[in-house]
Amino acid sequence: MRVLVGVLVAVAIAAGAACSDSYGGGSSGGGCRGPGGGAAGAVEVGNNLFRSAHNGSCNPAVDTIAAGGTVTWTWTATGSVSHSVRSQGTPSFPSSNILVGNGASYSFQFTTPGTYRYDCAVHGSAMTGRVVVQ
Image (cartoon, rainbow, N blue to C red; front, side, top):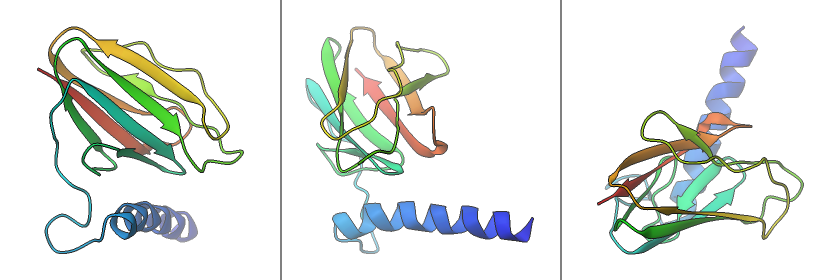
């Protein structure tokens, strides 16, 4: 049991470090930036992280878009590791298939305002995000 807890802590630290290291870290949020607005969103699907291309927020990746906007998730530097975009809760949106390979992508147009939460069907709560549609 102790080994499992240690492994889970190490994975959580590594996921946080991936966000911090890529965006400079610091005392104002560990390198993950807050939400931003726009008509479209782009999210990087990496190994054990979702990262907003717009504002750098990660795990959760947070994108705020206008109703009618589209979010595109793109698999980047994932190699042969499988990931997906799985809608969680209500409101919901269609989930992606489990995809493998750099350059794979999934897009969805959000027409109804609300906060849409998602995770990876393979990695669960280790990879999360949300889309705020206004």
